[in-house]
Amino acid sequence: QVQLVESGGGSVQAGGSLTLSCTAAGNIVSTYCLAWFRQVPGKEREGVAGLNSDGRVRYADSVKGRFTISKDNAKNTLYLELNNLKSEDTAMYYCAAVQDSFWFYLLSASKYKYWGQGTEVTVSA
Image (cartoon, rainbow, N blue to C red; front, top):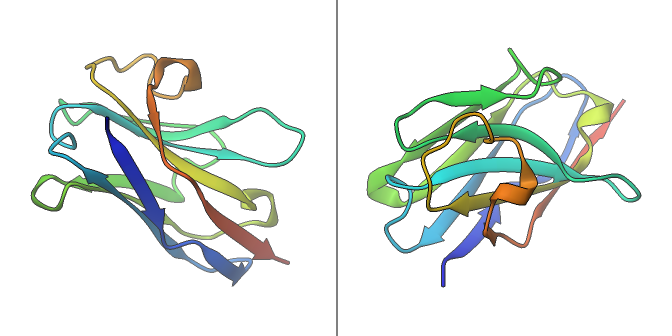
């Protein structure tokens, strides 16, 4: 069983920055597809950024140029750097993992098997 633990959420003003971390219990970061999703109440979970085992990334159009996904294999940790935050970025952010190597489905929630418990990001205007 893969366990994922997110951290780094918080409250910031619009235009501010945060860095989210997702630490995996187990050596999966180097070989799994990894992604960040977000969800607000009443809406479907949205793919934000994904990274496959080859290092290829994919971003939602709404965050391109503002968010950066990265990983540290030695620390078994996935990161999401959030810059120039907007009020519409307010959500619960989740990391997800699956033992696969796809790129096309990186932002598809249904393709992921393991999920963290989430970390909340609140952006005030």
